[in-house]
Amino acid sequence: MSMTVPPLGIFDELSAARDVATLMRLATERLRAAGVPSPVADAEILIGLVLNGTRGQVQAWVISGREVSSYEAAQIAAFVLRRAGREPLQYITGVAAFRGIELSVGPGVFIPRPETETLVDAALDLLPMGGRILDLGTGSGAIALSVASERPDSEVVAVEASAVAFTWAKQNLRHLALGNVHIVHGDFADPSTYATIEGGPVDVVVTNPPYVPSWAIPRDPEVWLHDPELALYSGQDGLDAIRQIAAVARPLVNPGGSLLIEHGEDQGESVREVLSSAGWQNPQTAADLTGRDRVTSARR
Ligand SMILES: C[S@@+](CC[C@H](N)C(=O)[O-])C[C@H]1O[C@@H](n2cnc3c(N)ncnc32)[C@H](O)[C@@H]1O
Image (tube, rainbow, N blue to C red):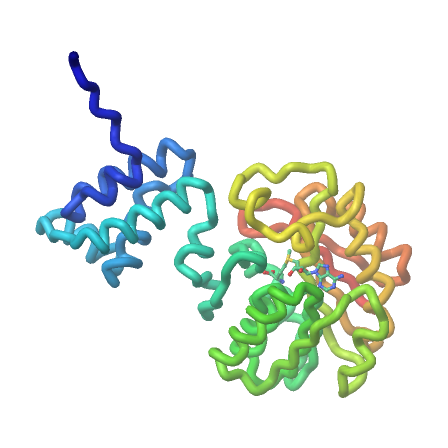
């Protein structure tokens, strides 16, 4: 009687590897098969995470034939499997880079996106010296904390409804040790949220709110499987949060002050209409680095 040996699962195969070159080959193959857009880079980062090395060091270890222990190989196998399930790389590494700062992130908080860096540029341009700025839906604190670190003269207030995201934002604030940020746990649509904020109206309100229509399925599995729903979806046309913010933010801004909103590339015209109807002046839409409509601003 002949016996067939069952094929090793990918976890077993990766765990059985005893050198970085084999791990790199198997991890890259697995990530590519799962449709991960940058399988080589992600494999290098995950191996480096366990072996405590940079991507350059991992590349050097492939050539030098560095060996790994069974414990290290099993840890790498577990990370590769998570990434192959399209869990965002940043949830696995625990960090996300945004402008000049590094933010701790994990399940339950929206991972800051490179396109939001454009929104921060626009906010910094509008913020007077010694000015005050309010970030609505701060998530990990990306916008609020980068503004505060790049403009130590400013005073920053941030609002977040999700208890999980609020905890990440507070942790990031603590790590960055910024003295000019106040983070409030509350609903940005509820005027009473602002009752506890001292100092009166601000010069700029900035927000990257949820703006995906409730029926839409985002393209990347990382987004629809792992980003928190509260961070993504906002009613039938995706504009519910923007309508709420347009209404609630006006009395919070000094006359002549600004509102800046990130939105979807096909929402510029609708957002300008929402802002005009809510009494905001001169709404204008600007494109992001890829030329897509991304940020609409208006004056009080
Ligand atoms: C698209 S994410 C942006 C997060 C962060 N500003 C960034 O750019 O990385 C939207 C954020 O708004 C928060 N949010 C949604 N509705 C909210 C509400 N009614 N009040 C306060 N925060 C809200 C979500 O929890 C999420 O953190």
